[in-house]
Amino acid sequence: MPTPILHWFRRDLRLSDNLALHAAAQSVCPIIPVFIFDPALVTSSHVSVPRLAFLLRALTALDAALREQGSRLIIRMGDPRAVLPALIRDTGAEAIYLNRDYTPYALRRDAEIERLVGVPVHAYDDALLAAPGTVLSDAGKLPIVFTPFKRKWLPLPKTQPVPAPPRESWAQTLPPSDDLPTLASFDHSTSVALPKAGEAEALRRLNAFLDARVYAYGEGRNLLPAAPDDDTLGGSSFLSPYLRFGMLSPRQAYWGARAAYASIASEDGRTSVETWVSELVWREFYMHILHDYPHVLQRSFRPAYDAVQWRHAPDELDAWKHGMTGYPVVDAAMRQLRVMGWMPNRARMIVASFLTKDLLIDWRLGERHFIDWLIDGDPAANNGGWQWTAGTGTDAQPYFRIFNPLAQSQKFDPHGVYIRRWLPELRDVPDAHIHAPWEMRTPPADYPAPIVDHSAARERTLAAYQAVEKKP
Ligand SMILES: Cc1cc2nc3c(=O)[nH]c(=O)nc-3n(C[C@H](O)[C@H](O)[C@H](O)COP(=O)(O)OP(=O)(O)OC[C@H]3O[C@@H](n4cnc5c(N)ncnc54)[C@H](O)[C@@H]3O)c2cc1C
Image 1 (cartoon, protein in one colour):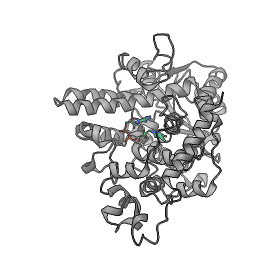
Image 2 (cartoon, helix red, strand yellow):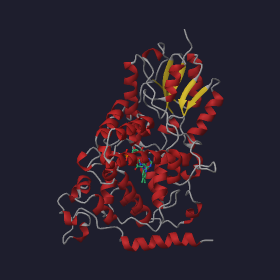
Image 3 (cartoon, protein in one colour):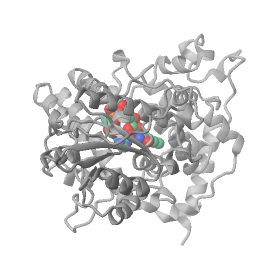
Image 4 (cartoon, helix red, strand yellow):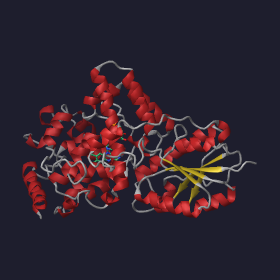
């Protein structure tokens, strides 16, 4: 019997274009596919229940795809530092294959595991098109502003997608597996309406987007559609939950976009595809920033902004979290988050600006709420988005640029489609008042008055940030 090897799935829940899995298949040793539930992650009070529920769906889909190949997913519950050495002992596996995860926690854990397991650990840079340490300025440093980063990122050689392992790659003899847990087995339940998970669904969504909507992305990405699949309003790809768990690879997205670009002659269409690729670069940028500057998970990227005097306003924070601020576009987005575990980028910027600039509440509280609810919640992108909006981050939006929620609403949801979709109590409000129902002679009784006056709040925030800027 040839000696088996383990492929340890983490944030790479797919069979096609999986660099570590592909390399494992090249080794011609039979592959045992493993997923480990680390109790430190799934039972902690910090777990995001919607994201855990989506992960469980993704694992069910991965297991089904493996069964089609005559294999199945081996599930283990426990600390990987204990589970992996035991699995190696029980199976006689001679190596572990995995794709790198760049969060500080994962980097620490993987370094420990490499020391513990006593067999080679083959690690691959699969989650990014350009690995940390490869995007360098002329001075040999990571560019910490997005545009120079992108300029250096674009010309780097990009790996082509690789095929799924052939059927004969999978081990015939598999160790026992724990049952795939259910959400209830962790004492959790969620009201979030989850999308279908899995690699096939991710590819279907990618192809549907690249067939048509990507060519209108330049304009469509900022409009707030009633739902992400609403073709009439353009919108974005809704691929973030799939990229988050690696049901789709960034190479599949990037090379798909390159093919879309080549197949369209119109200037606008091509510019739209380029804009979409830029979004993939933002994803890479924030992972590089987190990798090189892990302090961002606790503090401002630029330390001076740690001195901003944030307000302690638990009632206002609560109104924001529940979509009860009295600003319809903010409330619609915050309610969408609770229903879908997702919201469009424009909505994220609007609500993040509202929390940090209108309410002057610490961006970390908003970051935490997003991480609790988002099914695409990712430490790097989420932190980057919050620090960008708060003006404390890398490519800082100057703090004096403060989103006006009313103007944003009028511009990006001109007919109130988005607002009415998520705020049923405003469904009958006419277009003329949909962005500012407080101006109606008789405002809807079941909708709150604004909890803050935007103009006054703007002045308060400018003063708070200026106080920091003036410090020696
Ligand atoms: C405050 C705030 C918090 C955010 N939190 C997250 C998060 O936890 N997870 C997350 O994936 N994205 C986050 N984003 C980025 C962005 O809002 C989402 O990636 C995007 O809305 C996902 O929708 P989509 O897949 O339709 O994106 P598309 O517009 O179709 O973009 C394609 C892909 O590019 C990536 N991407 C797009 N914009 C960004 C961006 N600004 N930063 C990083 N990657 C980007 C995503 O992987 C996305 O799926 C956040 C943005 C803000 C302002």
